[in-house]
Length: 251
Image (tube, rainbow, N blue to C red; front, side, top):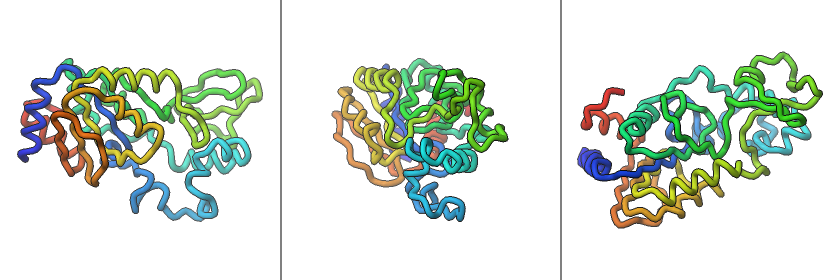
C-alpha cells in the first residue's frame, strides 16, 4: 500500500511522535466500540434495555442505582482476559525505538500497557484500577469483578468503584495535563481508531503544533490539517501490521 510506505518514510524522519487513539484501536482485540451498529450502545440486553446507554455509564447511575451500574460494569467492562492486537504491539515497538514519546488513549482497557507501552495518558481512566469512594483505599483489578456483593464495599463502609471517568464527571487533571503537554510538543501526531466525537477528549488534538499529521480511521473525520497530512481510511491494526513488516519489526 502506497500510503503505508509514505507513513514509513514520515516515521523515519520524525523524532517526537505522539499517538492519540480511541475505541477502534481495541475493536480488533474483540472489545466492542460504543456507537457503531455492533457497538456497546446498540447491543440488545433485556437487563438494560430500559436504560439509556449513557446513563448506565454515568455518575448518576453509580450513585442512585448502584446495583444496576455494577451489573452493567461486570457484564460489559471486563477486559482482563483480552489480549493486545498488532496496533498496540506496534506502538509499544515504536516507543522502544525512541520514536514514540507518548500515547493518549480514550480507552479504559489497559491494553497499551499490556503490550509494553510505558508512557500512556489514560484520559478516561482504567477499568483495571479500583478505589474506595470514601477513604481512597486502592483495590486490585479483579476485585469488583470477583466480588459477590452486588455493590462492593470497603472495610470502611464506602463503595468501591472503578477508576474510570463516567458521564457527568471531569477528566483526571494529571492525565489531561500530561496528554496536552505531549501533544503540544510533538512533531508528529498520529490519530487512530477514533471518530473524534467524544468531548472534551477530542479537542486535545487542537493543541498539536507540529508539522506532520497522520489520521488512520475507517470512516471520515474532520481535522485541521498540518504541513504534512496523511489520511488512511483503513483499520489501524491492518495498517500497523503492514508498516511493521516494511520496517522489519516482529510483532
